[in-house]
Every structure is written in structure tokens, then in C-alpha cells.
Image (cartoon, rainbow, N blue to C red; front, top):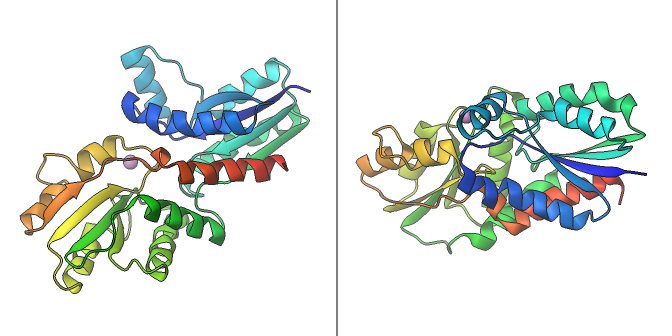
Length: 260
Ligand code: CO
């Protein structure tokens, strides 16, 4: 039986982070499933269009990738999301995938990063492995994407788990949802003696939001706004996909989906 694994990512137009994050997750999935052909799909139509127009690079959306696999005679396909949450992008992935259920003998779906409670503990530990030790005058601030989707609640639970593991110096805010920058600032003010802030993206890729909204030179980047408030700011532009222990969570989810 011909078997495949389709890695489904939001996508990015930054080639550098693409290689270090999405491609790294795909490489780990390929290594964990030597009997499956690995394919790539993106859920962001905007990014697929931009890569095509700017770089002449063709990347499938989920429907196109599944159509191709079905046409090539694949019978067993694992769809592994590399999204952070069960939000809009995951919904889009499912909507595009469901019409193909009858085209394969087996089509199984692997969960995004933060799905079950154990995922939050695994992700928190993966983050802590690479973070600096707790220091009295320093706070760590993660910038998540944020969404109107009810999955936005993931950020509060992840922060809770980090605090529960003893790291109350870590705060999570989002660019496009709640909690936002204002709530993060209030947390920083509530904590005594914070002079330094380490800013990190809580996103699989360190792409547009990380380079502009987080670390950009513009006045309204989080870095600029924190500097203006008197903090010494250091940005760590590393996507979650660069962390091997984070990638291992996606691999575990794919194994669970495949029933292996
Ligand atoms: Co965005």
C-alpha cells in the first residue's frame, strides 16, 4: 500500500526561517516515518500566492496536495498540522481535507501543537530547556499570534503551565488577540524590579510578525514600545520549529494519528 504523510503549515515568505522551522519539522516527520512519502502543503493562500509571484515557487494547499496524492495512487495518508492551535488554520485544513476522506483507504489527522493538557506541559518544558535561567530583574515575554477564534484560550493555559513549573517571570501576549501588549505591560509593571525584557515569538516560524511586530525598527513594534518604557530589550528571533523538543511533539501527534 502506498503511504504518505502531508505536513500542513501556515507557511512563510521568509526562506531562512522556512528552512529552520517548517522544513525542520518536515525532516523530523520524514525520519520518523521512513515508509511514508513526505509532502508539503500550506494553509495560507496569501503566502502561497506571494511565493508564486515573487519566487516562482509552487506550493500546494491542502486540497491540491491531497488531489495529487490520490491521483498518484496513495491509499494511506497522515495529515500532520504544524499549527500552534486548533484555530482557523486547522479548521481550514479540515474543511479542505474532508471531501477527500473517501478517496483514500485511510486518512488520519494529527493534532496541532497545543491540543491536550499533556501537550502544554511538553511544550512548556521544551521552551524552558532553551530559555535563560530566571533572574530577578528580567522578564521573558512571548508574542503569540492571537485570534478571534475560541482557540485563543491556549495562550492563557500555556502561561499558567509555565508559572506552575516555577517560571512566573514568563508572560505571554499576542499581536492580534487578547491578551495584547497592554496586558503584558501591566504584568511587567506589577512585577517589581524588572529592568530587562527578553522578547521571543511564540509562533512556529520567526517570519513577518517576529521581524516586524516584535523586533522591528518601527515605533509600534513591541521592542520599540518596551524600550520607550525604559526596559532594556533583547529579541530572540527563533521560531518554535527550531526547537527539537517542540518538533518532537508534532512527530508524536503524527504517530498517534497513524496508530503507530
Ligand atoms: Co498574522
